[in-house]
Image (cartoon, rainbow, N blue to C red; front, side):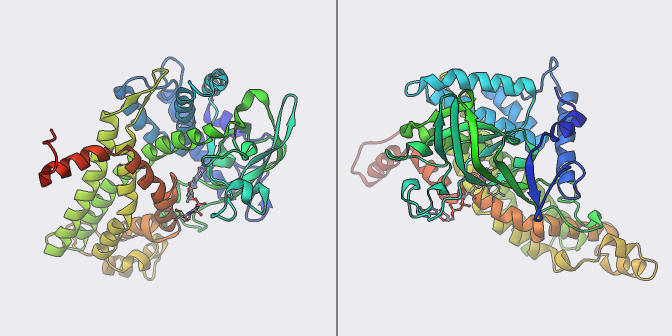
Length: 462
Ligand SMILES: Cc1cc2nc3c(=O)[nH]c(=O)nc-3n(C[C@H](O)[C@H](O)[C@H](O)COP(=O)(O)OP(=O)(O)OC[C@H]3O[C@@H](n4cnc5c(N)ncnc54)[C@H](O)[C@@H]3O)c2cc1C
């Protein structure tokens, strides 16, 4: 297994990565990206502490619902880069199972890659979302044929690809880019039906980073995002050669969507599990704030918190249900139930703004105007600021209440809060995608039969 320091050294591999208009030559030392690198390095050391027989506790593929639950918990604790890596490996396991009858020629290569990647303990990020150009047009009908990643040259020992994948979480911090079609492809779009693993430092790969990491001197006012942030990468494939052994689909248009569907499932499971914890945490924050304001017994505040509790409980119930109803694939790998995963992720995302509205409503305007921690320490105004920031003194002093406000602002009303609001809606394929998949897996025939039975037009349904 790699140590955190070995991980940091591994990033010095000639990768072309950019931030704020400049190329970054030393990722660990970079003022913004360095924090994320350190988080990832800490994740490596955490894995070593929790290793089983000298291997990462996440290695292998779960073969029982209990193992799946255990891994979901571990993934959740182990940080973003482990999360995206695990999701990538599980996507490949699911793809291999679904390719069995259609494109078996890729299965051995996929399994071999999964073993190699886990043994090398590398981090993998997921490149699925293309630039997409005019959304109303198919890849082959775009004015710019590079709007979707495509093969531009075929050589004896591999292919050359061109295009871009956008919004890729942690792209600059991983080692391989799992590059897969974002949607189904049609005959005539063979060049777009390409799936491959591409090293981040492959010649022609260029990554532009964006980050919600706070650019302030005093990170104490950013208790969440100050220490826990990851960049997104705008990944450009400027004619990148991919050797044959790293290609997992090349031209079979009928199979292109398998990758997106498989990744979607695992991505949404990750989203659902973090939303379940996130919703409980927001309930706790709302309650602490209500207590600090001396309003925990006010009827309207209790009602809002009760609504929040119901939302948090429903989201967690979907997580429990998707794990409890886990299914087993052809090679023995277990995957979560599609219906509950998608319905849960949708519910968590669609009602998130309502949760935030309640927290803001309960907390008050100091969410965005509370003095900074440094102000509370100032010799002239600090004591006065703490005095006037105190709410119910039995809950805590002025600094305690100020820190609650900072946590709420950072989480819901500042750069990270804005990022989170958009991410909840878009990451994992967007709300529309979750509606489609939920509907596809819902038992509509049973629902119709129940309706017919109720109206007396059909037999009873049990
Ligand atoms: C913070 C963050 C992290 C992310 N991480 C990753 C990642 O690691 N890897 C990755 O690959 N992606 C990632 N994504 C991308 C995410 O999956 C996409 O943002 C999402 O799929 C939507 O795609 P888009 O942003 O291009 O929006 P669009 O596809 O342009 O969607 C905008 C709206 O247009 C609608 N729309 C789009 N096309 C059509 C059409 N043909 N007909 C009708 N309506 C249409 C959509 O339903 C939506 O309502 C991330 C996104 C965010 C915000």
